[in-house]
Image 1 (tube, rainbow, N blue to C red):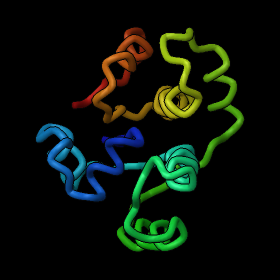
Image 2: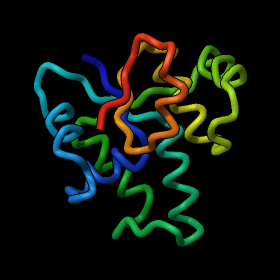
Image 3: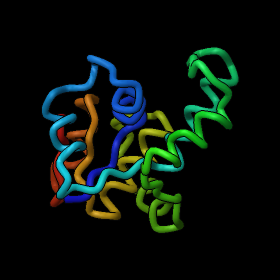
Amino acid sequence: MRLLLDTHTFLWYYSGSAELSETAKMHIENAENEYWVSIASLWEISIKHSIGKLDLDKSFDEFCVDVVGKGFIFLPIEMAHVMKASKLPFYNRDPFDRIIVAQAITENMDFVTRDNVMELYLENEPIRKIW
């Protein structure tokens, strides 16, 4: 199974946070599954870190080197993702959430997120929200 991690899921898994659900952790750590992180998540993290809303305990560049070294697979933003995001209803107005859920739908990846609003986007899709 291919999983796309929402930004908070990625950060909580990366840091070993107790905020991550046991179900999400089990799916991510299942050796049969691939877990992916959107480049949009890195962009969101870079912005929050640069304005002081997110402490990474290291520079953003060091953080990126570390996550690459830990084997995370990154999903680039493609035109198909942007086109899908443009057609989504506005259940959520956060542009990062919208592009990431559009990527999950377009790439047919189960979406690992605590955000219940995301379920609205997945109602008629063959993928599921995992939490």
